[in-house]
Length: 410
Image (cartoon, rainbow, N blue to C red; front, side, top):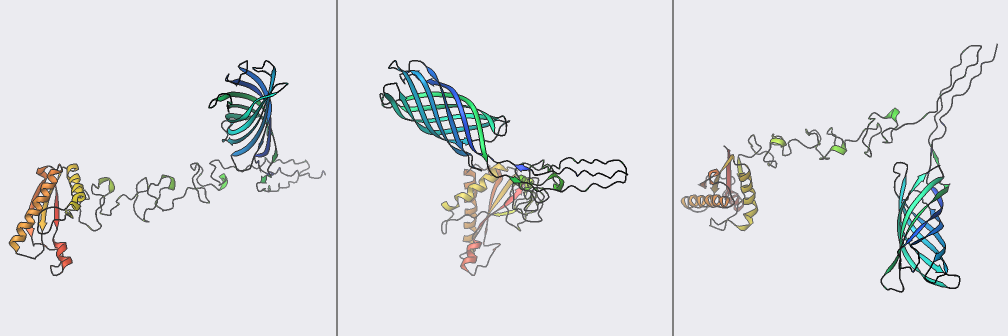
């Protein structure tokens, strides 16, 4: 009888998370388009060089050192001229876009122009450029870039010599940071079967998937299509911190009181708790406990109007309250307001009656001047009637000297 042969299942192994390589070296070749004020006979020339970039893990900005060289350039002297540049740049690398890694750079350098006999036209310049890398392998990429250089012209103060350099080359990267490994999962042992034939078992590598990229693997994710970049709980579901049934990312009222009914945006459907839903409430800030009508508006409104002493002249400090009330009546023309004046009990009742009537009429006149239709307004002087506080104290008497408006929906 042949001995049973078991072949172990294939393990997932280590899932490596590759880090950015520390160093990049890029041999480059390109063409320099000269502006013309460099005293170079032709409009441009070939150049070559090398760029060395030093990357820091977790940073999008990297320092880069470049050396660029051109030989045999026709210069004003009539002699073949060599141009060498040394450049230091800061390189900002953008996120990968469709397998292309775009970047931008900014920096400064020094340029030396020499002929076989003398050194001429040397100086500092600033540069800025853009480019992209197209990865070919893990450590090799095609590099394309365009750079603008500006150097102050010593012979023409205030003017700049300008160059546009376009280059292509290959980027070799090396020196990768230490890699981290994902936890390994052991495959279950293959059950042994009694047979004379050899049993060959192969299990596909285990792949840990997280399709919605929320940090919770598919096997444990109870909310498999979470929106990108939202915070989730251990089950992979978006958080609802105020427990109103609306996720944080959709909740425009994130601190709703527990237990209140909310709309699809997570907001209280009756903000002033007067029994009228926000959608139907034309007076959304009614004081709690106020008796309201079906529009959510109080049946009697204190106008908080102040008058000069023993006078029907409205004080300037009441301007804001008067305008707010006028705006309400102009907007809701189906409402009428009966303005009622009250006084305290100091003085003769007949005098107080007359004063309260004049004050109510003054409020009506003010509202008309603000554009309220006169058909919506009426007035009444109640004098000492219906006190809301005791007349035995100064504070109580102050409360009784008031203007109120009874709202009636037509």
